[in-house]
Image 1 (tube, one colour):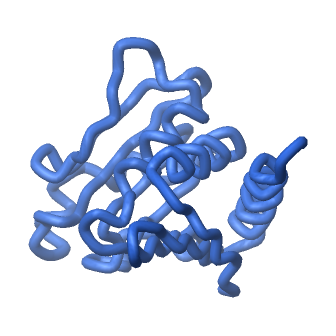
Image 2 (cartoon, rainbow, N blue to C red; image 1 turned 180 degrees about the vertical axis):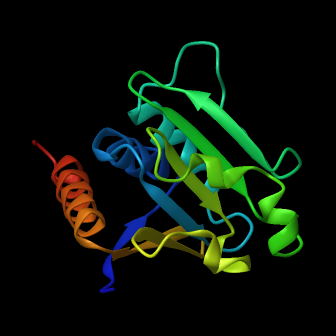
Length: 166
């Protein structure tokens, strides 16, 4: 696993834009883990991913801290959003039914993956969000060829969109 980035994200709007870019490139069966402290922008990023996947009208992405697992219908596939903040151990995690979402025709994004790192398959994409002085630093940690390609495509497109006049 080689880190790619970091990408400096100065505000919530750009965090959504980064998520939208990922959502436009993500593939069925993808499993993405998000790490970062409270306020780092994890749920904001997922809102962007859902928008990039063309979330169906009438649905709003919110933090699944209390519901643990939420699903969102998007144009081509479903987005599952899992939050491990309140999950206490493997048994608690397994009771969410999240395993049914892995390797399917959907996308699974897991917030607070550092609380249960074994929740992701061997090949995955981890994204580390750091928060300092009002801005964020986002680092991609792809594991596996498909995730390395995904990361490269996302970062190239995102950087291209950030260049004035492109």
